[in-house]
Image (cartoon, rainbow over all chains, first blue to last red; front, side, top):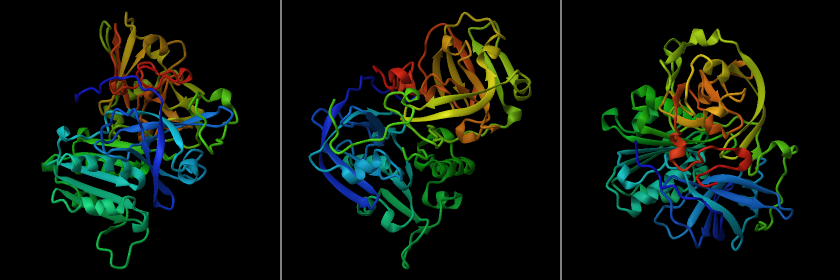
Length: 249
Length: 198
C-alpha cells in the first residue's frame, strides 16, 4: 500500500488567467496565477467552477498540465463538440479573467521521483496532459529514473506539446515514441497506426524491467493499451490508468 | 459567488434530478484506476465475510438462480457526469444479506483488481443497493464492471464497485481505495460530498 495522501479540506479559490496558448485549433493551455495554491503532485487534477450571471453553476475536472515545480498552474482543455464548459474555456476565456477552482485532487495516478520506475507513459490525444506534468517533474528534479513515452495522435499537427516533447527527448533518460493514426508527413520516421501489442513492446519496456506504467486517454485507447500490456505479461498492479470518458473528462 | 465573465451556461432540462455541480451526459463514461480485470465465470463467486459466523459464497450459477429485480435509476459520478434513467438488472443486497445474520454496521466492498470501497450497511439495505450483472438488457461489459458490480445509486458512482467479488462485513468503518486518497467517506451527491471535508 502506498502512502496515503494527506487529507485536507479543499476550498474554492480564485485564479487569474495570465496566459493562453493554442496547442492545436481545438486544444488550449490556460495558465493561472493562484495566490493561495499549496502545490500539487504530478498527475493530479483540479475542479473548475463556472458561474453564470443568474447564479447557475457548473463544474468540470481537468488534469493539471504544469509541473509541481512550475511557477504557475496550467490546464490544457480540448474543445468538445457541444461542450458547455470546454467551449467557454477554449473560445471565450482571456487573460485577466478570473476562474474558481479547487484541488489538487487524486492520489493514485500520480508520479514523483520516490515512486521509482522505470517509467512507461502511454498517452492517447489529450491523455498527454497529466503525463506532461510527470515529465516536467522528472526534468525539474533531475530524476535518474529512465522514462519511455508513447504518444498516439491523429496527426503531427494535432499532437499537443510537440515542441516540448522534442526538447524532453533530448535527455538520454527520456525516449519519446510517437504514433500517428490518421495522417503522417511523407518523410515520417515514427510509428503509424493505432497502438497494439507490437507497438507497446517496441516502444515500452521488457517484462523483466518491471516498469511502472501510466496510461491516459479516451476510454477505448486506455482499454486497448492496458489490456495489451496485461496480456503481454506485465503486472496489472504496476499499471495505473486514467480514462477521459466519452465526455472528454 | 463570483460570476464568470462571458459564461452563460446551459441548464439541464430537469434540474430537480441533477445534483449540484453535475451535468447530464448521454454517454456512459468509464473511470477505473487500473486495467480491466477479466474473471472467468467459472472462477467467479460472491462472498459475504467478516463479522459473520461463517462466510457465505454464491457461484455464478447460484447467483443467477437468485430472485432478480429490474429497475431504472439515475447515476451521479463524482467526475461531474450524471446519466438519467439507466436500466439495470440484478440481485438486491437485501436478498444476499438475508443469508447471514451479522452484527456489522459497515461493509467494505472488495473487487477483482484490488479495488475497495466502504459503505454503511444501512445504505445497502432497504431496497437501495444491488449486485447487477445486466445493463440495458445485456450482460454488463467488463469496462463497466462486468461480470457484476455493486450498484448504490444514491451515492456517487465510485461507491458502486466494479468487478465486485464480495463484502467484508465490519463492526466499524474502514475507508476504501478512493476514500484513502481524499475522496469523501460517504459521498452523497445531493450534499455534494465529493472530497474529504465537503
